[in-house]
Length: 553
Image (cartoon, rainbow, N blue to C red; front, side, top):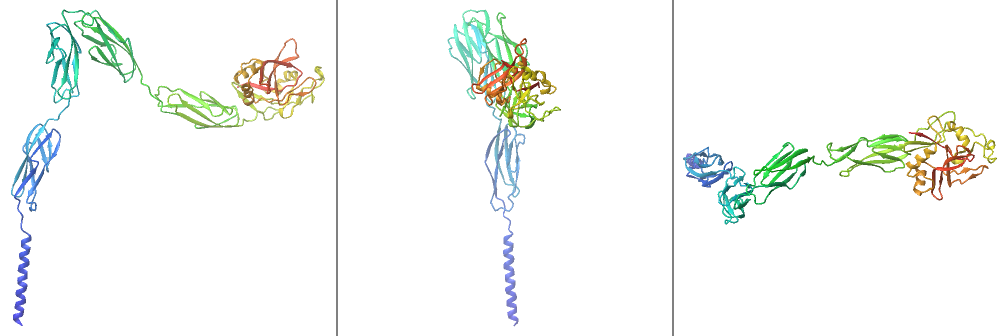
């Protein structure tokens, strides 16, 4: 049995030797052989950032780490392959492997940031010369730090004047245009050159505007004209007396004016030759601020009949130029509104609207009108109706003293005429003597039986003219809806009730004929022919008519 044991041990030993050999083979180090940078050359402008990639060979190298360096950190710096351009110049970026110190390089060129030309200006814009003389035109390339500030000069007619580097030489009599053109962008500006045989003196100067209106933040121009047109020295000096209101910029014979703030300023142009002057007044007004909204101090309002309250509007923004508004009521029979003052006329609901003149913005107030509190005056107190018309408050007869008689009879015999008569749903009809002598009994303290003039004012408020025999359906309807007129008819001298439901009669306290007391003025309204008589109609004082009380509100 021993030989077999030895064989087994030998086999195990061989297996372990093979396993160890394989393990050692997996731990071998793969050395770096080279490094390659991409790109090999890099161009950047100042402030820009670029990237360089380092590839270590072989790709399975155990240690692929590299170290980055710049030959000139004032030109370009490097970190992890990212290159930052600092300033104009050249630098070499080097990547060095940690394993073996293999190297590769990238040449970096940094150039200045390019600043493009945005415009060019010549000064002066108009130049006058005498044959054989020279003049200089100054050129300004914008912006001042433009990378390429080169320009090209040309004359439209070299036979009149030539130009070199901004120096103009007058050759012959006539006019030409000197043009400068930028190399970058081809921007141009011009100067008009006039050549004369001898010097021509200036005789005057005028401006194209005597007044220039501007709004804050806007621009305008003023152009000067020198006489004669071929004057040799056409130079102008511009002056302003108030530079807080406007800013000016000269452009040859034209002045550009910018409105800074509201106010006035005076600009004066003066010729160098002869000192001739011309002026323009500049008026700057505030910029228009549009209305954007409007609000009311109340969105809901409750009033009782005959009450009034004023709503306040706020137009936004606070500095809006036009804060004008208009008011309206959705139902003028329930409430009217004037300049925000809401007056309640009868029970119901209405919407009060305010609207801006600028922009048509609106705000609303929901109005509820409730019944007025009863007007009471002992000893004959009762609830009554009231109507607010203009500045006057009208009411039914408030006190109802007992009538001395129940009907009218006896013709014109004064002692036989009754005081009043019950006219059912239309109330009571009274004789004028009773009304006149018992006015304070019918109307409480502070109220009165209306005068002829009160009826006149009422008619005007309702849209009439105050004249007699106004035939107008609209006016009749106004008396019905706004004043509550009722067609109770009247009682004649003999006690007969007439024209109920078709005619309305109301006494005034004004006698029609001072020396003849049988006639007094009255208000009459006829439904059938729309005839309204507010004050010049009168009737027998022994008729029975309705009465209204009135007081100034």
